[in-house]
Image (tube, rainbow, N blue to C red):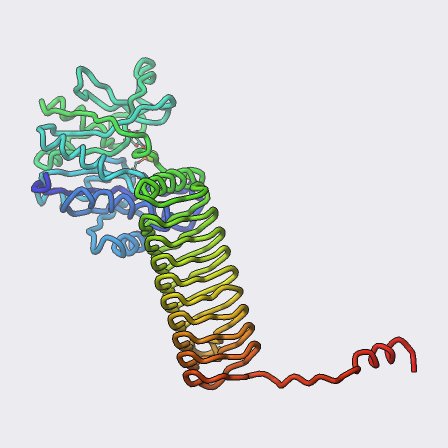
Length: 447
Ligand code: UD1
Ligand code: MG
């Protein structure tokens, strides 16, 4: 099947007014990725193929967002919204190039799977001229109904055009359709707008095909493939389904989740087998976790790699550019940004480590801060292997602490500390014997 050429036409010209947003609807995100990009990825995953995006308002923004993930994609503008068939025809020039398969997808149905698209393509490869993805539901109101007979699809009837009997049909149109490329333009051009909404309905391609003696089939798939997002409520619903799906995949692949429902994943999160995730963890984009690592409760990670058997949290924050090597540890209330933490190093409590290297087996005491920003630029702190940074130290960057060096607690370190040196960067302690008692007496009025 991969030998067949394919064009995926993604319709994204919708106004999306019910989102109540200044952003185009299809750019609202599921797991950190625009809905329309999810659709594009599903289309692309079925094999080599081209994508034609049909856009309306803010076309440049949508194009840029999609290209960021999928590479350059061809776009077409539908300036007047005259229906789904009309929208597909905006991409006429692309369809006319002659593909074996033309797939139509909606930019606001982010949960469509590549499997579902692949099944439609298989149906075309097996001789169907039109293949439609359907689903069954107890509440079909609003969807086009699939009118079938003996396994053949005769027509799709939009809700507003249905007879009483047809309204009772529970087999519905997901909106996703595949057409034989050789017939696609003939079918689309023959569609009229004699219906309740005076729109050119893509769904009429089925009846047109039947009239031309071409064959159409309907394949049943899970409802999720058809979940269209029109409001923020539906966006949240789609997000929840996406998250459930992906967590399930991870768990079946060997990841332990103590309370799966509280783990929020990103579209690109990578987690190896034998990782343990405690409750309430948020993954932003760009996180990779190696096997044996444990992420403890209430941690937030983005743009970070966590090495084998490393441990982070509870309450840790890893920001972009964090690279934790094997067996390193970042404990509670620590923030790490753009820093490499080498094997076995420990940052256990209440620290900020930014723009830094922490050498192997170094120990960073509680409350240590790398002062990486001077109000103008960011500077690097280099901490050598086996160094010991006493609690509540401020390392004022740029600064280097050598291998095996020791920084006394409470130091403000502004100059480099050579290897194996001991640095004190604090005022010497002065102790006055008996002075506290005298002070108390003085303040309480005694003489
Ligand atoms: C459509 C199907 C219906 C199906 C349902 C599934 C048609 C005629 N009906 O109905 O059978 O059950 O989806 O959700 O196809 N669009 C454009 N330009 C237009 C019109 C629409 O780009 O001129 C885009 C929309 O942005 C949207 C998609 O096409 O992404 C579907 O349009 P919509 O108006 O939502 O169709 P439905 O009434 O939901
Ligand atoms: Mg819709």
